[in-house]
Structure formats: structure tokens, C-alpha cells
Amino acid sequence: MVDGVEYKQEERLQQQNKLATFETAVLPHLDAAYNLARWLTRNDADAEDVVQEAYLRAFRFFGGFHGEDGRAWLLGIVRNTSYTWMQRNRSPQLNMVLNDEPHEAESNDLNPEALLLQKADAQMLRQAVEELPVEFREVLVLRELDEMSYKQIAVVADLPLGTVMSRLARARKRLQQILASHTQTEVLT
Amino acid sequence: MSCQTAQKFIHAYVDGELDLAGSLEVEQHMQECQVCASAYRNQTALRSALKDSSLYHSAPAGLEKRIRSSLRREAKSEVGRRSFGWNWLPVGVALACVLLMALVIWQAVPGLRPSGDELLPQEVVSNHVRALQLESHRTDVISSDQHTVKPWFDGKLDFAPPVKDFSSQGFPLLGGRLEYLNNRAVAALVYQRQKHYINLYVWPAEQSSAASEVADKRQGYNLLHWTNSGMNYWAVSDLNVVELHEFARLVQQAQ
Figure 1 (cartoon, rainbow over the protein chains, first blue to last red):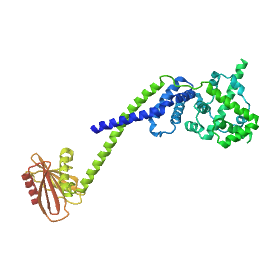
Figure 2 (cartoon, chains in turn orange, cyan):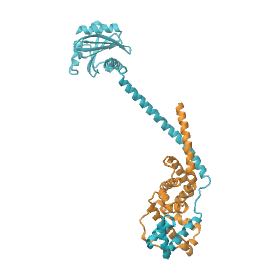
Figure 3 (cartoon, each protein chain N blue to C red):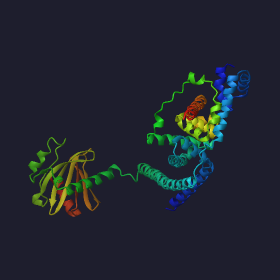
């Protein structure tokens, strides 16, 4: 019985150590986690729930983390949790099928649209990013807002490096098209 | 470098993902190509617009606190779950080891393992007790007539057990039944002495030589064992030893 008590105390101590290590390694990336969840779910309350759930999952899987890139590891879990969340809530975002084959029309579209950007304010930009298909949105957010390398994005989004690059190019192109259509409607009204 | 290749690599260039040679090629191309140069300016403009527009969603106040407390709860419940799971595993393994060792010792040390000689009296007593517990199991053929009981065994056994009624001597025959003892089918004859039952088990002996009575006592039951006329006899009863000997002599004399 004494053994059992000591065993449990040792367990508790190990668990305390795990918690402390986890909090130092993973908790500093809370903003990044929330930012990604918020951009994916497009909703404050959902993002909070997703992040909370993702942290619990991360804690459970912490044994499988070997001190590599804590942020990429956590964001991978946040991304998966977000997708599970969207599936559970039957988000229409997931109904879009993305074709990763390069689109000739897109890649040959060389029209500079820098002028549109000067007119676009923060609100418009935010709206345009939210309108992007979720697969484009995630690579763009990870690249532009989290300033992750292609390699890190590949880890988070579970994609080959080449796909990261092509998706990012297409995401930017699409974003500019959305901005163009918005500024045009604004001019018209 | 063609425009098409440059367009392909311009994003990697903007993102600082191209190696030195690739970057130099793209830069060289942009010096010559206005379209690609403006595409590059376009991308950098977009990048800085995205960065400056405070698009970053920082975690709301209070979320960190909520996560910390939910992690603490999770850590606590994991201790409960794990200690339950982990405490039983060594216990189970230890138990299995002890059992295995006990079995090995039991098998290896001859003194601990009941030999054939030891097992048989035990088997006889158990059979006797079981027969008494079940009224219906006491006899398969109920008859005090030895001429009814003896033929009943015909075709059920590969031998003919000697059956005698000793009613006049105070040991009336109640009947008989088939039993399985010592790895074979045997005849069980049931006698009575006042309120005591006697089971007499009979089967052919391996040696034809006669052996005198051997008395034993187990679990309060008296046992008598002898060999006579090529038959093994085991008499078991809660009857006292003296009267059981008397019964045994009757059986032996009848043959």
C-alpha cells in the first residue's frame, strides 16, 4: 500500500514536470494558435474553443513532441482541431474542392494590381482574406502573419513543399482578384 | 530565365526561399523585364499591406488563464487514469509470476505433487462424497437383489464385478452404478450399515497377486483397499473402521 502511495506521488511529480515543460514550450505560442484558429473558423468564440481543445490535445500528445519546432507542432494541432471543428459544424468552407494542379490562366496573369492595394484599407483586406478558400487562407496566414518558412508551413498544413509554394502563389493571386472586385464595386456605388 | 519561370519563382524569391543562384537569376531577369519587375513590386506591396493592416488576431485576455486551468485539470485526471492503469499492470504480472513459479515447484518437487498412489484415495473419497450429495446419483440401479444388480453391469463394463448382498449380516445392498476412477470405468456397489452408506469400488487389478487390506482415513472417511482374485477393491464410508473391516471381510469371504 505504501508502495502504491509512493508510486502515485512519483506519478504526480512527473505530471507536474510535464505540465511545467509543456507550459514553457507551448504556451508562448498562444497568440499564433489563436490567430490561426480565428482565421480558419472566422469566428471569435469558435476560435477560443478550438484553441482550448487544441491545447488539451497537444498536452496529451506531448510525449510525442521531441523539442523540435514547438510553434509548428502546436499550429499543426490547432489546424487539425479547426478542421475537425468545421466538419462537426458542417462548415460550408469545407465543401470547396481545391485543385492543386497549376492553373495556366492564373500563373500567366501578369496584370499588376498594386494600385488597388493603395485604395484597399485594413477592413477590406481583412474581408478579402476571409473570402479566400480555407486551403489558400491557411498558407497565406502562416506565411504573411506568422512569417513561417515554406518548410514550417509544410509541417503545419501537412503538405509537400512544392504544394506550399504553388498554393501560396495562387492564394496571393486570388486575394488580388478579390480586392480588385471589391474596389470596383466600391467605385460603382 | 524566361518570364514563365521567373513568375513561378517570384513568390519564392519574395519569401526568401530561393537559394543564392536562383535569387541572382530572378534579379537579373527583373532588370531586363518590366512586367516581372512590376509583378515583384506588386507582391512586396501586398506583403507589406498584409503586415501593416493589423490582421493579426491576438488571443483575447483570459484565454491563457482558462487554458492553464484546463491543463491543470487534465494533468490531474491523467494521474488518476494512469495510476489506475499502471498500478494494476505490475500487480497482475507479479501475480502471474508467482502462480507460474508455484506451478513449476509443484511439478518439480515430487514430495509436493500427489503421486498416483496419493491421488487415487483422494479420488475415491471425492467420488463417495459426490455420490452422497446427490440422491439421484447414489445408485444407477436400485435393487437389493444381487441378481438384478450384477446383470445390470453387463455390457457397461469390460469385466463382471462380483456382487453379493449382505443383508443378513447387517450390510444390505442398495444398488450399483457406473463410475469413472483411476482413468477407467469401474463398478460402484452401494451398501448400507444402519444410517451409513458404503461405496465399494471394484475394477480389475493389473497384478493378479492378492494384497491385504490397507486402511486410510481422509476428510473423516475411512478407506479400505485390497486386491483379491484379480480385482481391486476400494471401500469408503463414514462408518467406523472396525465395522468397515467387518464389511471388507464379508466381501472377501464371498469370493
